Image (cartoon, rainbow, N blue to C red; front, side, top):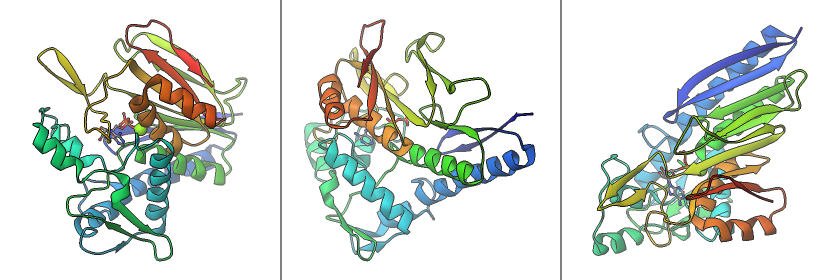
Length: 305
Ligand code: ADP
Ligand code: MG
């Protein structure tokens, strides 16, 4: 008889859940435990908050000399830079100085003056990273550059956990990180896939869409949860790394579907920055990627791709 194992852990500031279906309860449990350990391992590798993480070491030293990083960290940063290039800089792992300058890091919310903003932009941009593939080193072009994997790390942890479950022989599984990135393969018994609900960003009791996820990943970005208001204007936590400004466009939220959660996590942030037109252009050039958009003021979502 088939059974379901469900485990969870708190990592990267959110709740990760692992669901595994199969016949062999013992195998499911041990595989799910290893998947949870894998998520925790990734957090220790990538975290900005843990002083002993690879990323903290990189940020502390790479402005002075090239820093050799773990091959896995190098590969992820390489992929992140590639995604920056593909999205014309809309997704950028060097955005952190801007996040701080707008007070999002401390959760206070503040509007920088134009000089502070201009100075901060000098420390932002993926072109300020020097990657050396041969010796796995990364250097920063100047002091004050920072790498922050907040918009891709959860997706990567989800992918790694899925790989662990698949390698262990689990028939069907679903993993999510704080619901913002989800990936699934196979299907629970008598179903065509894993049922995913996309909640309305403003009214979480309301559903925007239900979909069946199978051998696919989905991530969602919106500015509805983290923002501050000044003089009637809303400033959201997703920033345009090219202008330094919080994103203000026609979108309320965007979900992205692709094969890997690393990609969907980064792209959901990028599409939120790019807006509807930029999202359409990207998807036209990248078959296999789909997006579900909700425009401000709209009731219904729009599927692209
Ligand atoms: P979630 O954390 O809900 O999954 P995202 O994946 O969209 O949301 O990540 C948003 C976080 O990424 C922000 O809180 C900020 O720290 C950082 N960020 C903001 N703008 C960008 C950007 N343009 N590119 C990369 N990271 C960003
Ligand atoms: Mg993201």
